[in-house]
Length: 544
Image 1: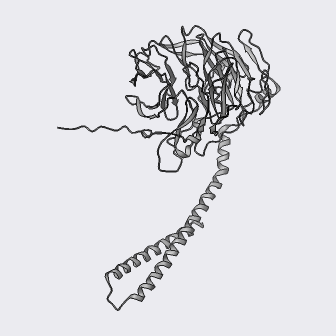
Image 2: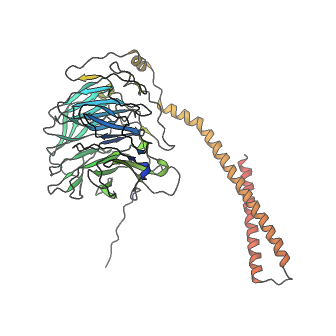
Image 3: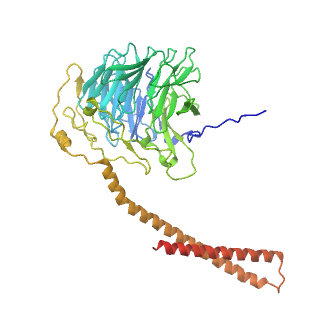
């Protein structure tokens, strides 16, 4: 009779563990919004944390620096320019100071946050986008093109805006017959996937306004669903079964007839919000009202979606913010960080891979998407596609100055804003799109010949390489000197012990203790001589 041993799947993320930060590192006394909308209610980037909060007589959200902790005073300034509650906020992936907000007042506003944070309440947005007839609850920035923003509302309409000019460039009116639950761009921003109240999954080309593929009844339940594009083109959806069990499904865009994998979890009522990490190919599921965060790894091997573990706490979460990879602590092997929203608190939770070495773990941190856009808005509108530009996290990433950073602020309709300066509100309606002429600053930017990115990086590397080699050589020589001093000190100790032993010797006969001491001294003498000789040889070689 033979027994088959279970084979453990090899993965460097099998032992990922989640740990909440200490109480003094949390944000306290934050009045998280009670709006009845199944959104994350929070957005995080390497500079700021934005949380939608309760506000009387309109809508507001709080913006504080990511390094801030402790109690948030009630007089802390907020962004409060909406006339109705805010439903969603999203940071621009190409400018950490730009954030968009969607509200029940049927508008989308774009704000510029000063580097030091807010000092006074901000009521004037740099751009106001008016094109929806009902409340707007979904925002999605283009992952590669600068100033392209997608919005979706309860009017079942999807709009694509050029934020730099405030113009509506594409509008999908008849693609969805009912309420849109979620929208997600693919890797290069050439298509989006949507899920609707009619239980259908759609893949849409927004520039052509065409629905490429449709899958009916992705999940049989009537509760809201979510969908997110993965790096390899697959789509992951969350929803409910006919028996109200929460489900996770993986779909191949080449064949939507059957799901590649389906996992059922529990019978809770909270909507599962998927957060996808394209660098590690991991998916984190946060359920509204849950006390747990589940995380999975998506691979090319069956069953394709592998459950890793879950983080559990005592208090339920009302929302969560997911920090992009540019903001994690690579020195602690942190691969992801969440900002869990309690009723009156924001609690950071770190996802860490345990490693013994203190060196940079390159297998955990492949090159990630940087803040530099791969395309300008006009290039994407003209039909171009490009993958995101990647940056390395090996030396603790520091963002370089972007040559396109001021494009949003140099448009003719937008006024430049410094820290503490007021900005004039620009309201744009769909019915009357305006034609803009490029300013002199824009012409100068277009006439400039861009410097090749690769050449600049190679030049910087060649200048820094001799400096790094000199530093390593100096550290090696210092360690050798310290080791030589230790060996010399041990040699002196051995000589002292030999003199003491000579005093107690009595003729040719010695005790067992003395004979052991003699053998120990002879061994230590040989070992010290060899170590000293090796250090001399290394010192001689390093001098050349």
